[in-house]
Image (cartoon, rainbow, N blue to C red; front, side):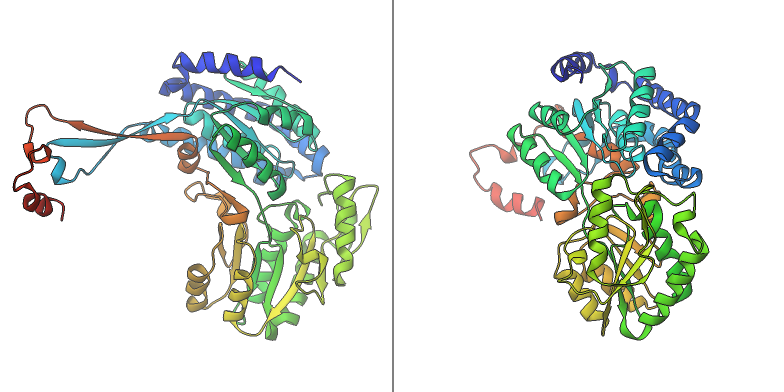
Length: 456
């Protein structure tokens, strides 16, 4: 493991030169990153195949392509983002002008998980660079092949005084969190997120926490069930369910429960064949620990589809669980695997009430033809983000900010949201010397009545 203290000394010295604040430097570094990703595209996807058995299409769509899209969007807009923004000034401060200036924090720590190891490391880095920061990346050792690829790319194109990669397990995480960074961006579990926030608090370091939780997928009695099933199956079993915004459980109206289950079964067969474990493109569970945890959760309900597993390849077939309650083990934690519990509801109000009785989820998905239900779900439930009549795709729009709320996280990124996250905004009022209205100065005499008129 490299000397973290030495890296931070180098980064702080480089940051103090002001080089990272130059627009052209930021653009050049983003272009270097984009070029390196394109050059190493096949190797990146090979690493993702080795770690998670991701098919080339899935690897590009959810990892490489998303980072390139983030880079392209940022390069297109960064010149406007860095400009000071003039804002309105109340009449009482005449004559003056008010502005918002953005500045980088300094040296930031980006800690990423194993489920989308390339995207969830590099997408935040795009934001950090665009805002003018130096960065230390800590990818997950569970996805060792992709982490090694990230380290190789970063070392090829950046000096560690600008961007460095630190690899290792818990000891590396502990060592990093003992140091004082200017910002910490963490993606991972709620449990580890609490540790990160506790460590950051010792240094009063601001944080973004991208966590998770149990994201509900509600299907009402007006939904297009065939289309809903296809989109639910795609979102749930993408990356074998190892997605923080995957539909965690299905909450379906009683009258359409059997129909949606049948449609889901059809879609599973259409996507993965009659033997998903024999499908070379079907992803695997990251390690033995998580594989065994998921097999334990399989006992939570009655398996009505799937349930088969293969220890040698660490794969579990897409599985539907019925006869599940909120007391079942599978409903006590984020599943993070290819198991889909099904619960039912009588009225839409009951469904929303059920969601609200549990911690605020990272995502919520609603399948409906009812504009009333759509409006109620958005207005009456709190969640990070989501979709109406689809799953997961809100992450792929750089114009939409992504992040959690409550126990599912804090802070947002993607697109300009990433630039804003890694920037401090300074508020500046520029006062004219040409005129100095004496209203604010003592003695106040009869100034109060005039002040009230100006501050209406």
